[in-house]
Image (tube, rainbow over all chains, first blue to last red):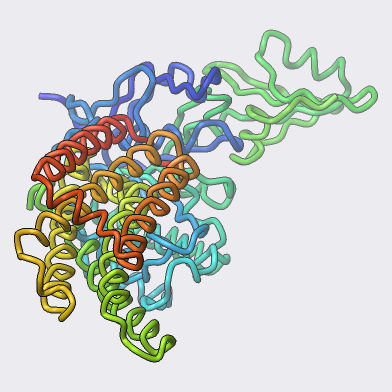
Length: 293
Length: 211
């Protein structure tokens, strides 16, 4: 019997001549919270869309529990990708009231938890009679969060769930997410640009850059081996000799680099060189940001 | 509940709500036109009612392609389930519009000379071609985007307005002549609708949900 996993193999997605996703291989295990981070246009939403069969891949396969996900009811019953709501337009879904939108979701989603949805509407202080088009950006995020959490899908994807939410509501979202995770053991994949704030929540982090997965690792282990080294250029070069360096910054005779230590590698702090631990946002900038000369 | 049942429920709720809204709007519009003209012209009222019904079918097709289909797929419906749900309820709503229009026209004093069979043929032709055209618009929007679909939409509306209002006001009876002569008109409309459903199915097959 297959272990419960969502697996994508060699996914390529091409729009025109551009490869938005370039041979992506990914395994998502059950019972983890993944952070999917990448710069704008890196392919995060496209990847989540393909994983949830909302978009077809140009090449490659996505399987859940060994079954293809594409047009497969049995597999799709376990997956939910709560997309960002589009405020543009005065007809259709934007013209639905919050209540109607959640009602439509409850009909299509097989494991919908109406009690949880009601509870969250109350906690977020959402006016159910309000039309989606009239909601603020933060309130639209709340609706997508409610959809995602109430779906009770084993694999739940959220695209920028905290966009537009104030700090209080963001904190509340992370708390509810962790409670739900603890209760159900569902898998969540959260794409976000507010990295530092969410890093405590992510068990694993997936970094996507220009359509390729450049890193998939336990968040704490990644942070434990990330170092920023700065000081005199010659000293920094000597210290990092033989190591792969990222995000090289040069300022006159000084230099700053980021390294990811491999098992067994160590750095010795000297008087002229500073070695610092990094947070997830700094690691992300080092790996996906532009080099600064 | 299985996926297909959920899909039928989803489309049923949306489409029936739309049907009720359009019926309400049609009544309001006819009353307003009557008030503006100072009298309730039966010919014009009948033309408006059938016109609103036919256009409503077209508008719903565009709404389905632009909003409700992407929404259903993003909630986890398969494309096949969505297509079936959408088509079943599009045709049920068309039937409802057709029956209501027929009933109104049948019992309006000026039209009592029409046989039920003639009315059935006339409105079947118009509603089936509208349904087919709606499915065509839906396919074009899904394949090429909103603006391409809107062009077809505009051309069709102009055509229908010419046929319907023109025939009523100038007493040309174009629709009646078309249909009275034979049932081949209906047959052609059915074939047209089936072909357009096929195009719609083809467009949905690899449809991508966009933000």
